[in-house]
Amino acid sequence: MACLSPGLARVQLTSGQVLLSTGTPAEHVCFPEDGLVSLLSGLDGHSIETGLVGRDGLVGVAVLFGHDRMPHKAVVQLPGPAWRVSAADFRRALRQSATLHEHLLRYACDYAVQAEQTAFAAGKCTVEQRLARWLLMAQDRLNRDDVDLTHECLANTLGVRRPGVTVALHVLEGEFAIRSRRGRITIRCRERLKRLAGAAYAEPDRARQPAEPELIQAA
Image 1 (cartoon, rainbow, N blue to C red):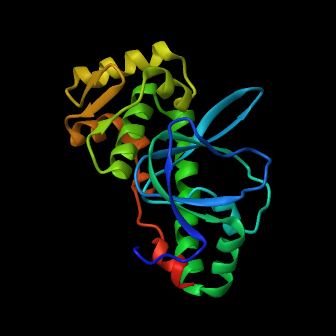
Image 2: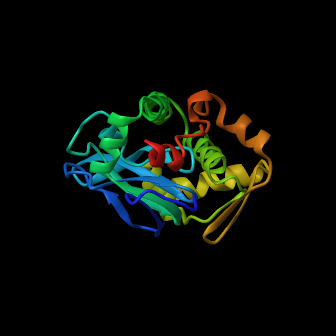
């Protein structure tokens, strides 16, 4: 990545940063290298996470399908470096590189199935199962055991009340799957966490490897 195309830039994403807003045009597409970005959908001032993006994906998948207005909000949950390219340069790269386009379409398919699994979990699974699923997904994308997130942020992400998240964390701790401290959750046993998540955590939730910035550079 030492020699980058003029349209590709390395940036630092910060906690709480809004990368995309619902109903507005996307000016850039981002490929996180570390950290987590929540894709949020909602009505009447209430939102719930419908997708989670880390080093496995891109923020702005709607641009891939030629959409101008974004269907969701994208907010940085955990900070980290990312590669950013303008929407215009991204569209140009897609036109010029069939390899890039096909690679990202496969990611978009995985993302759509992940969103369906999120809907299933929200409708059919307990808060404990959904929290276990989210922590597993976070671990996949961060490639580490520590997740620095408050109870309040987790509650907003899952669309539940904060006391519900606190109880769920105690349940996972009681099973020795995690250790919870102020602002930090450490995954102690992934297999126990998977058992607790049950059907909530499925194959579509696992991290995939997206297109590398080199593909955009070469397009």
